[in-house]
Length: 326
Image (cartoon, helix red, strand yellow):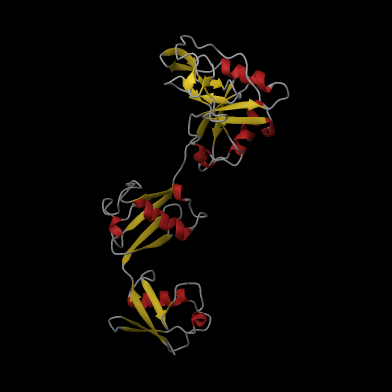
């Protein structure tokens, strides 16, 4: 006997589908064909249990031929997405709730990513188009004029190549071009391989710093705030040569005005521990993030309990000719 499905208004549908070997999804598709109710809006109930898993066999829920299931039509929106990269493929997304118009475009993208998975498209690669216009992620569906049963288009975001500058220990700067689907997902380990191609320094001999902080191999550009045009410093772990290489880099450091003193190098080595530090302007009283000691970024004199021995009266910022190693 066919399976019977009855909604809350008493309307009954007879589905010519037998239990053996069929899944919840097959039943929903047949019901959609009979009633016009989207499978995404259907909530089927049997013996007070919701048939949630579409891939589960009907027999798993104890359903036998001829039984009657209860149908609850859920509130929400159906949004259809046409894949521009695969003409003919349409994705249906169901947004639950009574206030879908308050959801944002980013909420819709998350639902698509959840349904399709990263193999289809990563969240930050999704571009949604309505009438050839791409609404911003923070825009609500109402402001984007997206409504129930609307049809949108989806395409993969193309990321341009990223240029990263690597300032070498020998005072040379190398331009590293990152070309991949999303350059921001590049890891430091991958960057080191490209640096090796340019400099000949093996990855295990490289010490990379950005924003005065050392970079670990598993870090990604997006985690560190590295973007197009960023400058990363390379200190080679070469026997007997690392200190001299770092001094060469400090000698070539760009300058800025710090505490009203012009031409002050923006890169210094901490006078207490030797850590490479960056300071692009402002007060000269600087605290090393590594050893927590404060010092004058202009004359490099160490402070005492937060106060500088030079009292901030420095007028000239000399280039460093030494590095303390501890």
